[in-house]
Image (cartoon, rainbow, N blue to C red):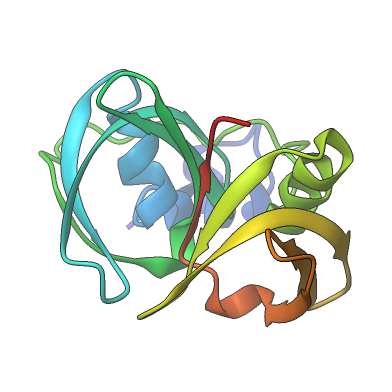
Length: 157
């Protein structure tokens, strides 16, 4: 067990954060940045994604070389990776998942939101505290709880 006195240059809070970090899904994902892995996300079966970037609440990946995704780390059910080498926590100033969605809205990107067993295509119109308003391709708005979004797929315009 790690004790604060073993590391006098670090506070107990920093040690606890790093100890918890090394036993988390974002830590595992960080250790495989730059690699293609197999993973499962909330009801969508097995996916094979190339991991590009990881933050505490989300990660960015690609599939088939050109399809880009942003997914919530909390939605990952399983990962098929070797976790023997712990990683460093990402920069603490990384935006939260909500912030990433707001940036997608500012860019007016066409996206597909993947929920547990359904998906919706359109453009992010507004991001609230716990919801997202998507303007569907038909022009109809739909409000979606942020916690139900498994991942976001970027589509060509």
